[in-house]
Length: 245
Image 1 (cartoon, rainbow, N blue to C red):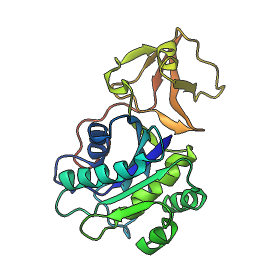
Image 2 (image 1 turned 90 degrees about the vertical axis):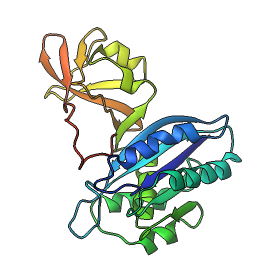
Image 3 (image 1 turned 30 degrees about the vertical axis):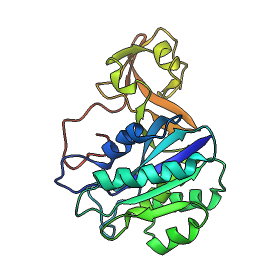
Image 4 (image 1 turned 120 degrees about the vertical axis):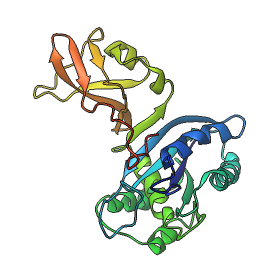
């Protein structure tokens, strides 16, 4: 069965790493029999009214587990993982839910968080049937952690920061090589044409698919005959944008 394990606000502006790394590292702390399928970055509202390290994003790990009994282990391991990796001065939040839980209200909460400021009490009320906990500072991270679960379950937004061998792929691949990994290149040209298997795709040094319609989609534009490239190229190291690290 599928579980969502979400983290938010584990870092500070000058700590040298973002919550993205904390989420990715959780793969090393999973109970035996579990597998981290992917890690999804969700973007929430950016506003002067909302305290944030840099871009107000939160991370959700999608975990495959043998059965419901693993929920407790994922919670225990996740809390210990936070204790081992959070940075003093941050406000970490942690959430665990399964794809079989009733997450309709939590989806709506996540959608609201993309454009409206919400408070901790709203999150706590909605999470009464799943695990949601704060682990330092103001505990404001519970808002983003809950939102990340809802948005990832919805499957219509978010950027994939880890999936299978995503980070080991070369800069140039074919469309077929991506499709073999369940990564689906999609043309965002005006005519939205199909991309043949043997066409080449330049990921510009940073392949980060989007979560669209519950699929991992790679938006690309044509750069010549049988050649495509992704929309975004890899940025130089930026201390203000650490969530993909």
